[in-house]
Every structure is written in structure tokens, then in C-alpha cells.
Length: 184
Image (tube, rainbow, N blue to C red; front, side, top):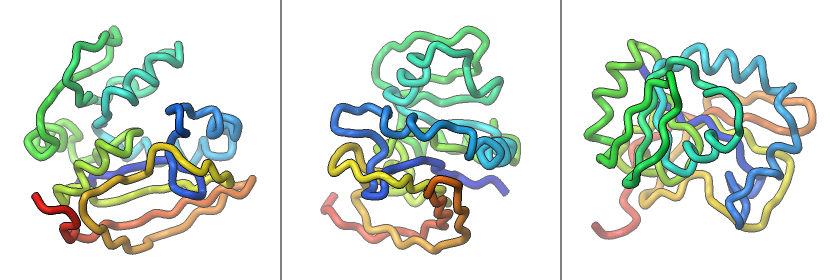
């Protein structure tokens, strides 16, 4: 059965990007220690969902499209450039309205919510996010863009931990249905 997963790295104090929306602090750790783990995660992914900021970040890396032929939904309200050969579906729609199409395209594999906390929070607030795979990096930023800025409390159930060389720890959680925090 497909799961909707938010796989992300963050500072120890819970930020995925710094105050200026930069990731230099994260990129300093490199990818070698995490590559095998990432490859195993990605092998179970059948489709992606990402916000416009994450998409633009990926485009700015000046490398080939990193996600091969995986169908990718980009949630945006503006016109963005296309990556030749990539299976991209731009939408301004609600995550709940797109979920069925995304899971169908995943072909029984998982849906990865890539990058941005705001998009992941939309899935979580709609009780559509099954798992949070959070790699806590050994750094404190003090402020920035939070991991999961939900409007509802989310109870998490720890499923597994993975320790990486250099002090990072992946915490794999299952999300429980939320309780409303803010009036609708």
C-alpha cells in the first residue's frame, strides 16, 4: 500500500532553511554518508509532490533532473519553466484533490513530499501525510523555515532511528490524525 512520506533534513532546532531561505548550512555536510540510505528510500518512491520554491531550488542546481521519470506534481500559482524530459504536472489545486492522481501514478509505490514544510503541512493538516522521515543535522540555526508548520497538533509515533557518521540522526515517525489548533 502506498504511503505519503515527507523525507527531509533539518537543523537540530527544526528548520529546513535559514532566515534567507538558504541551504548552505546543510550542503556543508555533503551526501556521501547518506547516499545509500537515500537510494533505498528513493527506490520505494513512485511519484513526487513539491512546492514551487523547492522546484526552483532544484532547477538552480544546474544539474540534470534528479528524479528521472518519476511523475512530479509541482504545486504553484505561477508559470514556471519546464525541465525537458521530466514528467511534470503543474497544479494550483488543493493537495487533497490531487492525491488520487498522485497515488495512481505512484503505481503502488510511495508518494514523496519533497522539500518545503508549507506543502508538507498542507498534507498533514488534511490528515494525508503518513510518515515524516526527519534527519536532524548537528547544527542550530536559531530561526528560519520550520519543518512542518501545521495548523493542527500532530501526534507522532517513532518507528525507527538511523544514526549517521558525523552526528546526524534520522527519526522516522508515523503521523496520527490531528487535532485542530486554529479556528477555520
